[in-house]
Image (tube, helix red, strand yellow):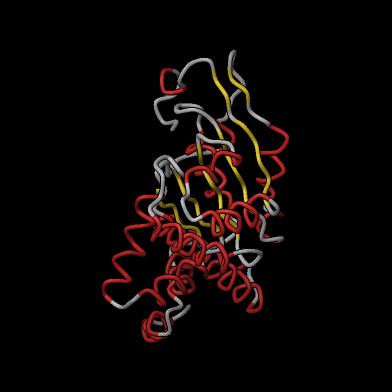
Length: 247
């Protein structure tokens, strides 16, 4: 069996999964029936799965989801609620991420926009993609602070590298002129290079009216809507009364 020195070296090489496998194996009698190659294979499989689980946990933690437990399997058709289940099922597969397409989730407060977005985000994490959730206010604050501290380029580079960015409360309040410029820069850099989910109460046709810089508004709306899957979530009554974990 593997000696203490070898186990220590495995851990020093950050092969803790393999070390754990051999430590567990020492407490069983299974070693007698396994050949050398079989032992190595199982140890490698154990290390591989441990690293995948660790990466998934890290991606979910870094995503900062408003609804970390959101699961598409929990979405239910209810009287008075409208959800395009076919589109959501297609999005869950993740092809929109491969094609760097965006998603627009529109609906009134309580329709479940945030929950659906976070459920899709969890699916993306399971596909080992880097995800980040921000409200529009948090996004603007992050970029504004970076501008003041001279870190704007690094901040934008970080946001551009996120494979799935979720922006909640999109155009809930009219953005200022500096914020419109920030949006244009970010969206222009992410266009067809990464995916973004926009959670909004307003249809895209009304976004333009909320921006004073009309030339930039044209560019922002065009870049998003020409590369996005759009759906409307509707309900007669707030879903909070039915599911307390929904948006």
